[in-house]
Amino acid sequence: NKKVVLRRHVTGFPTEEDMEITVDTIELGVPAGLTAVLIKNLYLSCDPWMRGRMSKHEDGATVPASDFVIGEAMVNFGVGKVVGSTHPEFTAGDLVWGLSGWEEYTLVTQPESLHKIKHTELPLSYYTGVLGLTAYGGFTHVARPKKGDFVYVSAASGAVGQIVGQLAKIAGCYVVGSAGSDEKVSLLKTKFGFDDAFNYKSESDLGAALKRCLPDGIDIYFDNVGGATLDAALLHMRHGGRVAACGMISQYNLEERDGHGLRNLFYIISNAIRVEGFTALDWFHLYARFEEEMARYIKEGKVVVVEDVAEGIESAPAALIGLFSGKNVGKQLVAIARA
Ligand code: NDP
Image 1 (cartoon, rainbow, N blue to C red):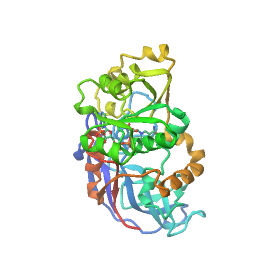
Image 2: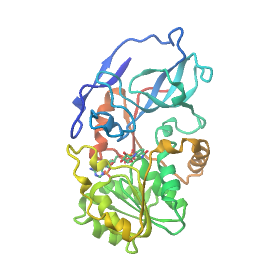
Image 3: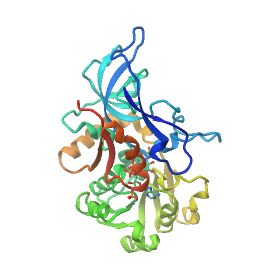
Image 4: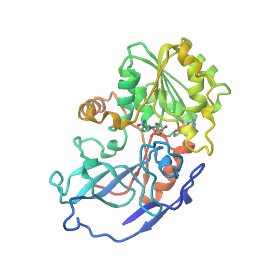
């Protein structure tokens, strides 16, 4: 059983050497007396939040999940096939998504974290991204779009951003995205239907870029990056605007917290801006409804998906690290086996 394990806790920018591939042998079945499900992992999702779990948290901060354990397989969402089960709700052959190990086979002892895949006619890998809850929940329940709203999305070509942009178009909004390369900017306009887009790395003044693309201001900022981008957006929000605080990837590798470089917080007051954070798991009770709606959009061609698929478990560390320099074009995942 090949696995990706954490070698050491990380400070600053993570490297491939912070992880290693190890091999052990396992029984291909559920041990007697245990209620559990044995999964053959097919797709591993690469997610920025894994960075937080690679550090050691000693400052008492509330974190969404515990630190990864050195020497053990890292854990994240993925798609797999049940190869053995003593749990009444799962049988061999079931396709599932949920929390699993970064390894070829995982013995899941808390099977309530697994969910059966309903739309097996869609690419199974979609259950690591577009059929997750973040974009849908954050946009519909936190940003609460109205027809005609001016929407700005950062990290817009990524897993979450590309879906938010398309949901914004479905909701009748005007949507602008920013991304870190001309190739990504072109994708935003040609593939995902953004009304406008800019490469934030080649803009000398983020605020000027926002003013150029959204001269009447921003009603909704879907924030995936935090820091200077959030600060610039705050200055351009319209009265009553909403910031859906989804992620702050520009901050995850900082060694020292520096107040996120925010100078424009006062505009939250003067422009009556609602800034609301969330985690995707907040809406799990809505998942069944969301899954149907999103599956329909995909089948009707209203939502398209761009994935960046790394092949083989050995490629997982580099794929994960690549998120933090924008190497991924679209949803980053790792294919490790076929169903
Ligand atoms: P992406 O697919 O968007 O990949 C990450 C992207 O972030 C990179 O491709 C890069 O794009 C951009 N990026 C990396 N470093 C920086 C930086 N220093 N400054 C600005 N942009 C940077 O990832 P996801 O869609 O999975 O995640 C997007 C955000 O949403 C993250 O902040 C993540 O933590 C958050 N998230 C939150 C969830 C929640 O429940 N609240 C759930 C899932 C994700 P580019 O080339 O454009 O710079």
